Figure 1 (tube, rainbow, N blue to C red):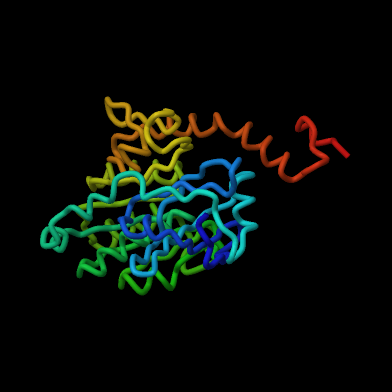
Figure 2: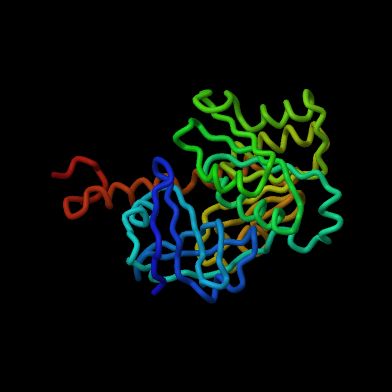
Length: 293
């Protein structure tokens, strides 16, 4: 069992948890993920690592309620525990294996969308700890859905916030900010790292391709085993078939077939809807018709 040391609601349907997992914390690197399971019969949920403390043996995860399993996770409190907490899985960010002196010469920009801010944070923090600054664009639908603002400000001097509805700082999407920085403020970037919803990453990549900026995206599709055996997280990357759990989660964004990835994501919507209905109706549920009393 893996004890939850802290459970905090960051925004509507977005939660942060500190989990006691010494072996995972010892080996965590920015860009990797874990798979958690709430109980013996629970779904295996992949979550990108938000932070870690090797000395205390703590791994920090951030998740958004998107279905029955994450709804159950949100009900857990400090003192409760996960049945399983497997990781770290996947490949670490390529930044980790790049020579620090070379990184210091690069102009790097991160574009985070919504809960994608969580996996961006450890990479920016790691760069900051190694004397490398980066520009960070964080976008959300509105002010109430912006997360980790203070944490991000602590690790970068160049944080650009934007909201779709203009309720905080500026109105627009992350792509609008990036376009403005390049076209109107004369910024030049050697690398863009985009993490967020598939549709957001797709449009970031369309823009960066036009601007000539190499771009890395972090893919988080449906996974089952996290070892490449089930094939659920299959992606088309250029001419190759890749599996996000073992080949990623980071890939060349200009090669990812986002349209195919979004179609595969939609395949699971009906099943997830049935699971959520069963959770909400509890003992009264029978068949998923929605009319049970």
